[in-house]
Image (cartoon, rainbow, N blue to C red; front, side, top):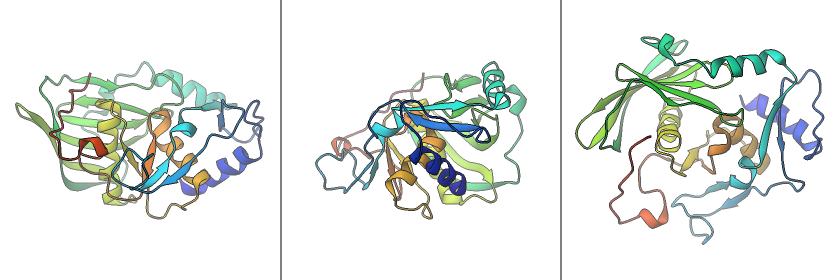
Length: 248
């Protein structure tokens, strides 16, 4: 993944942000809608412009201005065909070479859960499709349908909890849990939250920006290498009871 990000980054750096001309051999190109290169900046936790309690890269200007285009018709057809999928074929499946990761994630919830689509990408700038069946949440890449994570769900009157996650064995276990937590908070609860960055990712603004957009799409805004688990991540939330609204 990180090697691919660097290849995309080299194309982005050498292309026009207004009328990008990707190589024919490059299936997907991420390009900016803005004539000026969107700012990606490192903010310390003490910076008054940082709304979060952790330090990291502010990527919002970048991710919100990006477009995903492709000359590969197979990629385009795959994305369009997957828009009509409801995820039922995923029942009782796990990611390839999946391993079980115990965890303890909890989210305030006062509604009902129903099997079916929880989140469906509407455009190529959104990178995830998420489904719920038989108390398991399935997280899939929107372009390919690849099953990336499965999370086991338990619910009581005031919350739902995730006690274990399945992810490919090649993944870092802690990072996989952080990614699932981020996807729940950002895509299901519709919150602007910190997205996790892997420890081995170069601390370069351009590399971080491209990784963030390719992994999380236009919904992500601020990446951190620190532990992003937890609810009170906004400075305004610290010391308050956080009432997270139920997913749509």
